[in-house]
Amino acid sequence: MKIIRAKDYYDMSRKAANIISAQVILKPDCVLGLATGGTPVGTYKQLVDWYNKGDVDFSEVTTVNLDEYRGLPKEHPESYWSFMHRNLFDLVNVRPEAINLPDGTNMDAKAECARYDAVIKSVGGIDLQLLGIGHDGHIGFNEPCDVFELGTHCVDLKPETIEANKRFFDGNEELVPKQAYTMGIKTIMQARKVLMVANGVGKAEIIKKAFFGPVTPEIPASILQMHPDFILVGDEEALSLI
Ligand code: PGA
Image (tube, rainbow, N blue to C red; front, side, top):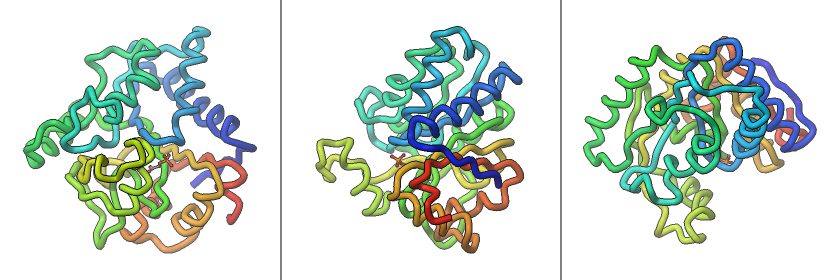
C-alpha cells in the first residue's frame, strides 16, 4: 500500500489525475475502472483540462464503472450513467461503444450481474480501478456485511448510504433508489492497480480503520491492504489520523 499525501482537494485531484493519465499514456488501450461520488469530480475535471490541452488521449481507452442504481433510468440526472457523461465522457474523446456501466433498468438482477461480469472479462479485466470510500468503508456499493461478495451483485443500500446520497435527490431520501448493482470485491481486487481518493476530515476515521485495522468484510475497503498495487491519495484532513 502506498499513501500519497496531498495538501488539499485540488492537490489530491491533480495527483490522482496524474496517476490515471500516466496509465493512459503508458497503455493507450487500457481499461479504466471508474467511480462516481463527490470525491472524484476534481480528478475528472483535471483529466478534462489535460485532454483539452492535448496532454491525454482517451480514444483507445475502455471504461467500466463500479456501480449503478437499480431501477433508475440512465437519463435520470442522478444515474451514474448521467454523472459519468456530465463529468467525463461527454468532455473527452472516449468512444461511446467503449463505455460500460451496469444497466440499472434491467430488473433481472441475476442476468444483469452475469452480463456485467462477462463484459469485464471480455475486455481483459481492469488495468486501473479508481475508488472513493464511504463513511462506513464501502467501495462501490459493497456495503459492510458478513462476507466479501465476489462478483457483480445486487445490494440493498444501507440507511447511512441512503442518508449520504439524499443530497443528490433534493434532500429527500424517499427519492433515493434503495438498491444498486455493484462490481464485487474479487473484481476490484483483480484490477492490476487500485487508486483511492479521499478528502475531508469526515473520512479520517474510516481511513484509519480500513487501512490500519483488521481486514474484515465489515469494512469492505480493508481488503485493499492485501492488494499488491494499491495507492491511496488523500488530503491532509483525510489522512490526519494516520
Ligand atoms: P463521496 O462518496 O466521494 O461522495 O464521499 C464516496 C463513496 O461513497 O464511495
